[in-house]
Length: 396
Image (cartoon, rainbow, N blue to C red; front, side):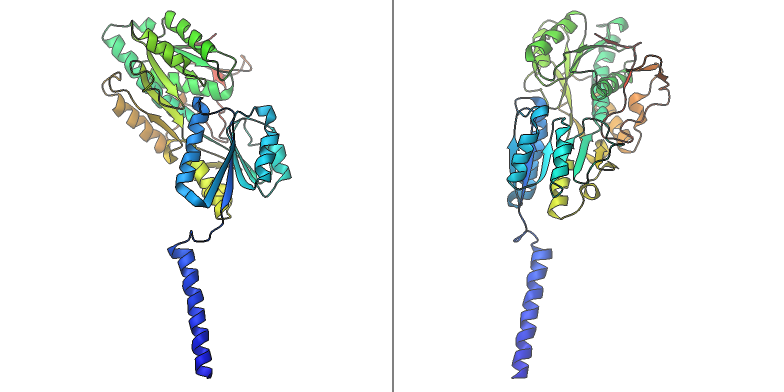
């Protein structure tokens, strides 16, 4: 009888071990905890910025399938973030992502330490005291801006070499929302990327004072084109600028460089290339951390600054896409690939390397020497290049 009991106990133990091994190693998704993931969008998918951010939610669902459920709020103003956040917490979200820029997120995070709040960075948080469950993140966009600038500069170089454009006419127009570090860093890197191929290039910047105004962005673009700008890029949310370029391209050479999404299908005669932040690597990894009960910054692959993470081409956090072969100058792809390779190997100062004197955007008496370049995002995912290059960039 003892032998029967012993055999029964051994069999039960073996069964328990086999079930554990199956669930843990062979099929770890069986009966694992399902979590709710929240998204708060500052607009909706009709705008390029939110559309691009929402692509990460799509990829998240593909990656984790039935292990997660996504809940979201759209068109949330920065000063109205608190209520949607509380709604998502009350519905059981374990982690919430936001693409807006609201100080309310930090305050709500303090009330719910068991929920992870991940916000696209809106200022340098490196010297701020934040709770462990509050995180910021952003791709190092200047890298993609610089590389897309190479495509623009290659077109200018070709036009000048063919005597279709004089060096004095190598003008780039830029439609921008606000004069903040994120915008200034982006358009400066873009111009210096262009000047790496066409040193004659210079830029005119027009500020709209809003992230999204189709009519205003289109009108400003039309004015820049009428004033002689050959290349147009933007840091705003509508397709107004590219449509203005497409219309103008019927009569003369005009090219558009997009941000956040490809516009090749919208404007095949003028869309040259697009640059974007890829939000997917961070968001997928952050959810992985929550599923596995690990800290987000220990899982995400990037440049960690406390509770803040950034990265560029080296981890796929930024991209250039849809180089228009019908418009691009010969050899452009090779130049782009070379620059991306340099960023991947750590040569990041190239994006802000120039012999032009840089002047602080807040104090004209403060200047910096850029002959050795400038290391952007060194301590924060939010850009720190907040300088003007008045010799080659005019702001209107």
